[in-house]
Length: 582
Image 1 (cartoon, helix red, strand yellow):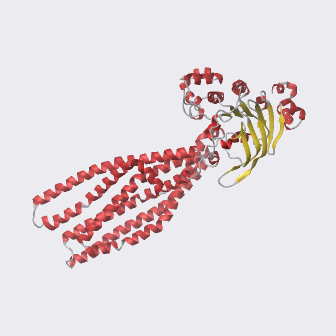
Image 2: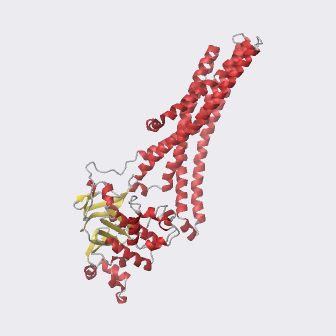
Image 3: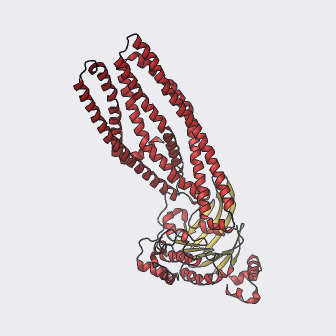
């Protein structure tokens, strides 16, 4: 843990060293005051040396002004150091999360991941700044104070230090419980963030189903769990803080009792006794500082542990012999493929079992069948979003596991039912796959997707902000922008997964023209429940949990009077003539 954290310190080591040097000097400057006061009481007051009193008072003032400047440096540059460490860690964890397998996101809420990137690393930032600084300053003050105390009265110092093992034992006994409590805090904060993110994202459904009270109840449950976890951590903190405060108070009692006895027996002078009490204050200051920052240190370390949990997860890696696929032609083959979804707890049932399927290049294959039969899963396996259990998926005769994922996905375009637009402009969303595209190329893609005229009618044209998830646009406009995005990408393989099922019939018909244009010269896989979208497919495959039950042209499948025929007659009445269009 500490090795990984220190690796983030190294690029900013100059700031770290400046912070520690200034902390050292601040700690050292505090040690001069008791020494100067001791000399005043023992020498200058009895001799009535007013000049020396003034000189040393001025010296104290200069020391305090220097200390003021050093504290300014510590406060500003120390926090800058912490923020830069935090930024580097946030950069790396974001990059790591972006490269995790898709299956990881099936089991983890977005809000929970956001909590690790924001809240957890904020605590790490504070610890990175204050932790080493306070520890270093405390060690300096403890060391110097110990030397000074020993020089004043060695016997009394031995008595004082004999009390320290009890404080150390107390800290060791309570540490484990505190670490567990603060780790649970982080999890409950992540749970609240997850509930909040889900609730806000689904606010329209909440209003439509009058579910405000239900969402409030779910949030309240998560909130109560957080309060319970936080209360447990505060019990440990109260016990630790109260115990350490009691220890420091008892130290004063020990010094007063034993020091007073020595004073009565002439073993220590009044000046030395006052100086000793002042140095005891200096001795206890770093202990109090550690008590005050202990919660921060514990929370920071729990944040580091949660950071490591993510960073230790295996990435979506390419095979050692993987090569760039270049520009593929688009022949797709499933050879005895079996697959089941996995999560972090159990393995699910087989979704695809020994599937054999071949799609020639520049052919269009329609996939139909009941929900849960594996149609969308087939689409997800082609770009290698998930790893198959057995068999092989080949494109142009090459196993996709022998291609780099980047080059494989560069050849694949996906238009799905659930269109995702990023918060930004229309231009940025169309050019998402090709940020270096020219304005002319973006406009041409929009024209081919039949969205150009709509964009020109928007308030700022191509610079119009689409809002979060494209909320400022209609469903048809969002879908056409996603189609324009694929036109600009110009892939050899196109996957249309329920691309128009969320649209009304009129919008579907207009978008279908864009999809027909998009499909020209490409290998296309079309998934749809509405058979009206299958009008231009070369062949249709009926997908069931047991594999491909039927395959052929529309006419061939209707003639078999099997599963497709039943689906067809269920959706269309042959008497109305509409079914003849598919």
